Length: 521
Image 1 (cartoon, rainbow, N blue to C red):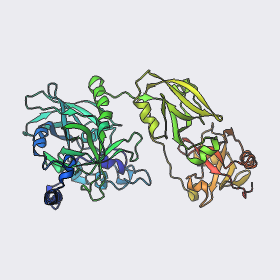
Image 2: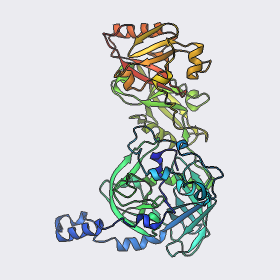
Image 3: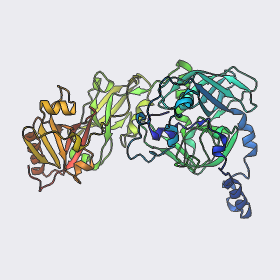
């Protein structure tokens, strides 16, 4: 599983709970809805109407879907519940499937072997390749080793032992291999890019370990971003429950257009919000896993953030678009190409970059060693660059840290000169403040000692312990430097100033704060 309650929904294989737990669930709505349709047919719309039943298509597709069961040996020690990672604050999926983040009990129960049940489907009958979600075979921690024992069971109840060919954490996909058998039936891949909102789809899987369960619905939305760095989900209202993870999402041609991986459900059952990884994105990854056991992704080597209107105004951009580079990693493709912090990446390989969410996907989908042209906004004008894309190092962490230090606990004593500007209390960095906030000896700038409530700085979530490195792309060493540059911006009738801030986790990020004409330094 992923390291958050949000990701727990993504990691939703059915567990070895008593079936009585789910005995109260009812499945009547589908049949009732069909009955209503029969009572009021619309001949004029017949060519767009759903089929009267999905029996023929289901009979054809059911043999391609398998049950995946994964068993792991009990851990030697048991972590406390408070050690569990938390979902990003404010995520709409913060409450997903909390029971999946609960541990398997205390004492005697901790000695049991962990069992996870999910779904999968055959992609190559001759070679015995089966696809499922990575979280189905690893459990809570997506980076942990696969389960000790993995079994694949066909619809005819024939069971095979499986070995892991390769798996990818970011795409949450794994490829298994079983012995080829005449009983294996492979799926046909479809083009998820051709799928349209409103089209009918079928989801087949093993919800709550009930094998061969078919549910129908429509594509509710596409290109859903629900908090992950590379999210691009297909959303469907087809009934998807715990245990459907890793199963296929079919179009009406019987082609796989997605892998069901995630549901949103505070109650634990389907409420019509299911999500699937698109086939066009997972197929290249699956091919790489079969070929080399791992996925290879393009890498640029920059930290980026969105350009809001305040930042756009401070940089002289006409519109809030592109991806603002907050830092460049040494010896990265971006560094070799001369990309700098403060650059705004406007286009990549001839395509517009609408925001920072789109750029990572554009980069990872670019072939390794491919040279691409980009345009950046620098010093008030467009600058062209060429970047040779490298392979993403396996060790790269894709999330920033947040120490959660609050003002009352972390505010240092006021050392040296202190001023209030932009809703910020500022001070020079001292030996005591370095120790208090764990600032490295190489960190220089101006320390944030307080943040005024209800100020723009508070809205941007600046906190005591942050360090101002630059104001309007110029280095600052003291509070007086900050005041001088803010005053200069005010005199030049600038709407805002652009701050480069190092957070308490060591990451750097830009913030645009409006210049208040009534402020006093």
